[in-house]
Image 1 (cartoon, one colour):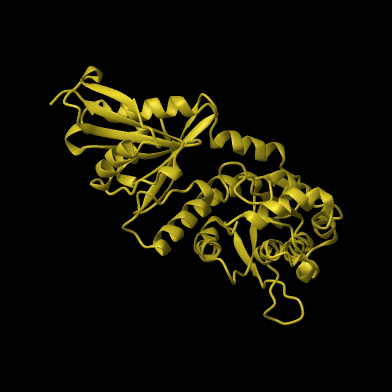
Image 2: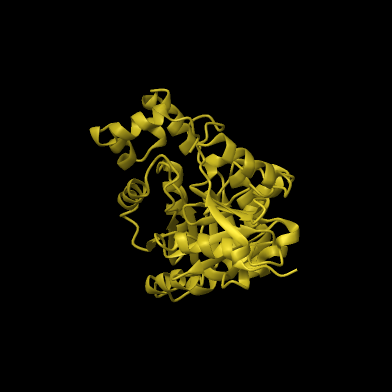
Length: 357
């Protein structure tokens, strides 16, 4: 059966219209998707000439989501029409777009110009398309590569939401034990402490270390905030978390390690967050294959051995207006910031927030 674009018409979904929402939910549930309107910024629907919904696709910032076509129309131009429309819309604002899809459908996106970055069988593949790519990030790393005489080159990835004595201890340990340390700071603004604030606190807090290069994590390191689980509703949370971690670690091993000649990755033990624990497990499993030794350092504690320093504890104390109870968790730069008027708006935002991040 052959179809032309003229056999279809496009409409933009009105997320405020209950009728529109029910149409898209009914269509997607039959294809294994659980549509959550809060997770998208834009949704398009494709109808055939009989006014039947035969396809849809959505966007959340630069990520394509909920791309689906009814089975009998998958040999038509509907899929390419949806993907082309969505990616063009993304590229009006951003330099690239991403899609996370089942490995078996990755080839469909590749046929439209998307490049495969990594796969975590059997759950999903990550692809990108646009004016910039992961090669541009590798060029950024090359431009910031340090000259070293030995193979003692380490890496740490931090969010520092906010920067604590625990972070400072881990960074100082890695810097002392290696010729050079690359410190990747997660740049996604999905944390209550904005990237600029986190960057500045870290920079001031480690200014005494002359063998550390601070690097922007870009779109490719710990980008869990844009990993969707919307098409994995039949999978357990543990499986999804583990596969997301696997993709992230494989990207680090395949694209970051060779450029900077990294031989050590330092991590802290994880006592609270299951997602971070999954990352640690995957690093131990995957990175040695890339010639990287994972150094897991016991999380720093104060007083009681179980009184682990944790950025989440700091945020909780701010929320409960008990900042004075955890000031010992903080290096001087963070402590001074949080008790100053400069952080007043941020502290109020944390107090009124319901998110753990």
